[in-house]
Image 1 (tube, rainbow, N blue to C red):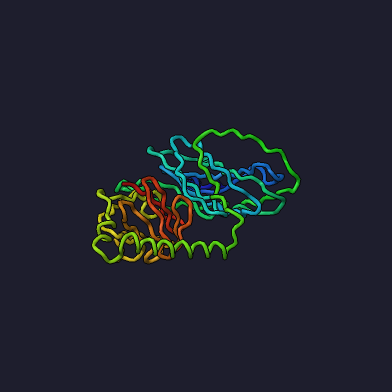
Image 2: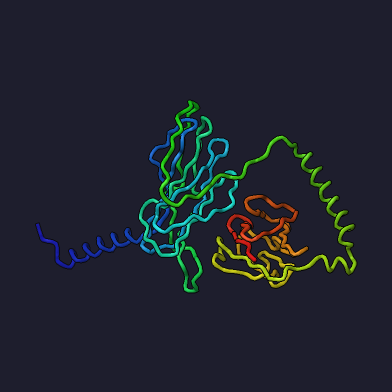
Length: 321
């Protein structure tokens, strides 16, 4: 048998080394579960995993679930230095975000996400979106490029037999994931009637109290002495801060707005922020708007320092003054 020429061996070795290097530098995020069979009342646990050669300073994930079968509890990250950033939660979508002040190398579990099995059913947990965050040259948070999403879905079998609820240990940074409770007992038409009466009463009260169209009204609709700020915590503009120096301030994707957000889930003119009686208010203009997890639809909500405002699915900022 003839021996393989030395240069062919060199080519073969080079190919193997390059293949290994490519496998090692592959950066991705994926879901795993130690078990997929649970009884009603037991805690369902899945893990968000990642492998990255680039040190990161944060990560985000969105896991789709069936609220009729599962109730989210929390996410726990044991990555050193990672701190939970609470976000307004929507029913059916567990939305998680973590950040660190120092770069961290990750290769394994980013966070354990926990749910309660509500009843017997066949259901799935789906990794809707996920990203690893780094700081760009300007010092702002930005998604790490080239990250692939591997296993996105975990199929679960939930037995109707009631199991024993366990007190699981919590070690690491805990992120609450429970959506706001839905109040029962008031029919839709009753809510509509209450809203209509409330709006009519507010308009009548404003007319009598403020004297719309008069000089007194202009004096009462005073602007706070210090301009407030909006600090973007999540989304394409994460890390930026906007001063509300001009009021009213319109926010949306249209370049004509005072604050422009290049986000696919933010509409042309999403919300308006204005001042009255030395307070700030946020008015929804037809987009998907939440203040501290509560939906604001075609109405206004008072803004206080520390309030968390979410526009669409990912644009999140904190109001400060």
